[in-house]
Image 1 (spheres, rainbow, N blue to C red):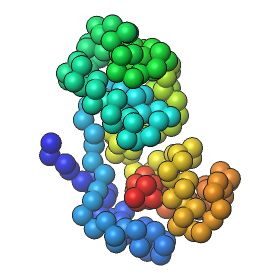
Image 2 (image 1 turned 120 degrees about the vertical axis):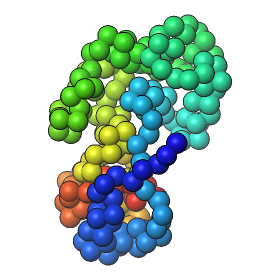
Image 3 (image 1 turned 135 degrees about the vertical axis):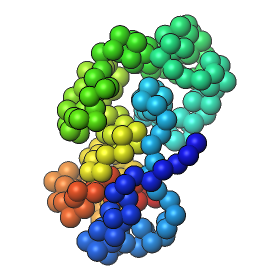
Image 4 (image 1 turned 120 degrees about the horizontal axis):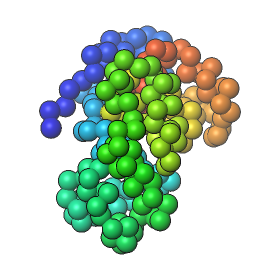
Length: 199
C-alpha cells in the first residue's frame, strides 16, 4: 500500500514544535513517521469494533483470525458469515452484533459516505454514532485514521491521556478540563499532537 502523508503534516509538525517544547522532543524522535489513511471505511470501522476494550495485541490476534477465517473483510462477507463462526475466533456476542449492524448500515446506505468530505468533524461523528456499536471514541479514531482529519482530540483515549501525563509529569488520570486546556495550544492540529502522544 502506498502510504501518503496528509497535506498538513509537515506544517503541523513545525507548528507544534514551536508551540510546545516538550512535544517537540517526541516529534524529533520520529522524524520519518506519519499518519496515513487506513484502507476503506468499512474495514477501519470493523477493526475499531474488534479492538474495543482489549489490548492492541489481543485485537490484532482476533483480527488476524478473522482474516484467516473469511478472507478480505467487507460488509457482504460479515453479513453472510454465521454469528457462531465469528464467535469461534474470539469475538464476544456483543461485538458480533455490532459488526453485523455495521455491515447492514453499509449495505443499506444508512451512512452519508459520499458527503463526508463536505461535512465537518462533529457532523460525521453524529452520522457514525447512529450505528449501534460505534461510540464517540470509535468515530474519533475513524476521523483520525481513515479521513486524516487534522484537529481531532479524543478526550476518552487512555493512551493519549497517559501520554499527556507522562509528557507533563502529571499524576494519571487528569480531569477533562485540564486536558482541554493543555490541548488548546495544539489547535488546529490536535490529531497530529495525539498521534505523537501515542508514540
